[in-house]
Structure formats: C-alpha cells, structure tokens
Length: 263
Ligand SMILES: Cc1cc2nc3c(=O)[nH]c(=O)nc-3n(C[C@H](O)[C@H](O)[C@H](O)COP(=O)(O)OP(=O)(O)OC[C@H]3O[C@@H](n4cnc5c(N)ncnc54)[C@H](O)[C@@H]3O)c2cc1C
Image 1 (cartoon, rainbow, N blue to C red):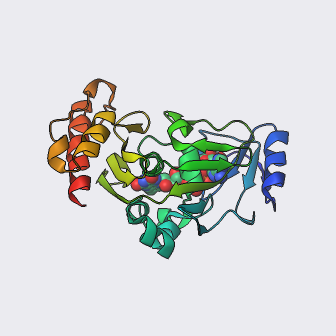
Image 2 (cartoon, rainbow, N blue to C red):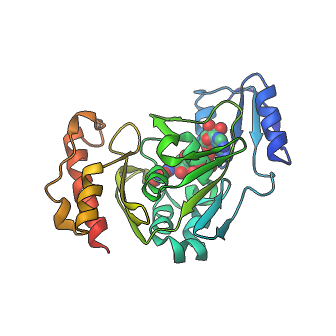
C-alpha cells in the first residue's frame, strides 16, 4: 500500500470539496473493495475521503411510496431492516445473499453501486425495481446509472447520497452464487411494479441488463410457463473460468422462472 492522506469530512459538501480539490482522491465507504485494491497496489490514490462520519448518509426511511436507503447503509442493515422487509422483501433477500457476514456488515449500498462490479447483486436490485440514485448533484434513474463494466454515470466529484426504491407490488431475487466469494455468477430480479413487470439480470453480462421479451411475456401472463421458451443470446454474455457464456445465458431463464414461481 502506498502513502495517502486520510480525511474524515463531517458533511457531504466538505467531502465533495476534498474530492474535487485533491490530485487523485477516492471516497471510501465500507472499504470491502477499495482496501484490497490498495493493498494489491492496483490503485494508489493521493487522498482517501472517509464517508463514515458524514451525518445523514445511513439508514432507511419510507417517504410515501418510496423506500429511501442512505448510501452508507450496510448490506446487513438493509437485509434486517423492518421497513425494507415489509415493503420490498425481494430487496431484503437480495442484500442478505451478498458475500459473507463480514462483507455484509462493512459493505454499503453506495459503495457497491459506485463500484459497479458486473457480478454484484445490487445492480439487479436497483434496475429491477426501477430505483433512482440520488447524488450530491442530481438524481439518476437506475436504468441510466450502470453504463458498463465497473462503469457508472457518476462524474468526478459526484457522491452517491441515497437510493430511492419505489415500493413494488411484488418482487423476488434468484441467484446462482459463486461458491467461494458469493458473487452472482448470474442473478435475476423480477418485479411487478405500477409501470409493469421488470426483469433485471446481473452477473451474466458486462453490466446489468433488462430482458424486454420476458417483461412483455410476464405482463401478458405472469407465470413461469410464459417465459420458458425465451432464450438469451449467449454472444454478449461473460465467458470465464466460473461459467461459459452459453451456461450463463441458460441460467438467466432458469432463475427468472424460479423468481416468478416464488410468487
Ligand atoms: C470476499 C468478498 C465477497 C463479496 N461478495 C459479494 C457478493 O456476493 N455480492 C455483491 O454484490 N458484492 C460482494 N462483495 C462486494 C461488497 O458488496 C462491497 O460492499 C462492495 O464491493 C463495495 O462496497 P464498500 O462499501 O465496501 O465500498 P468501498 O470499497 O469503500 O468503495 C468502492 C468504490 O466505490 C466508491 N464509493 C464508495 N462509496 C461511494 C459513494 N457514496 N459515492 C460515490 N462513490 C463511492 C469508492 O471510491 C470506491 O471506488 C464482496 C466483497 C468481498 C471482499
């Protein structure tokens, strides 16, 4: 690990000022991804800006038909939260399937989505529920937030402050876990929302994606049978030592059917 300056700002505005003023600064949330990256010298930021002591970034509230989750809320807190369990049990279940207990008690929703790992679970949770990412500068629809492999719409100096989830009629998350890390080899979130059925897939491709054909079929007939003949083209799927592209494509349909069958 290289030397860096460590900062503990006490407001989002101060954190943003530090982020924009330093030569090559990085925010740190749970550190679950960033610290191993620093230890392996894959990144050597000049400054680390810790969001831990910034007030207002942690916790869950209900505002009308939306559940609002602060960026510094850990996966364990989302999993255990009574409001999330009651209003969006599919999201509580997703958070409880992330990694292991240590990761769930340190890792945060803001850190996870800003990192945009192609095998992370939350991208499917956000896109599947039609969530909105709130930053210190603007609101970004989840559909526009994840732009590629480890890439998001976040600009320099932009800090995720919360995520707003519209309460769905119903949702469920199904995942094929990597047996060592817990990351999603494939994860599928199916939600019935006011604006129709949404099907979001993580782990299978370079970034989270929706399956329009399944959404249309499930809007007509919400049954596992309605999507059993829908196949995902394998040519844009990830192909690595964990699973072939063809296998991942096959598993998307299997998991989508399981999610629907859980209704
Ligand atoms: C062993 C292991 C297993 C794991 N298994 C899973 C799994 O099964 N599923 C899964 O989804 N994830 C998994 N993870 C990742 C975990 O969910 C982490 O929580 C996540 O990668 C990063 O969150 P963090 O809060 O630790 O962020 P950090 O590591 O602190 O930061 C990650 C990145 O996000 C940026 N960042 C952090 N907060 C913000 C913010 N508010 N605004 C803007 N940028 C920000 C940082 O600058 C950094 O670039 C695993 C991690 C480990 C180590």
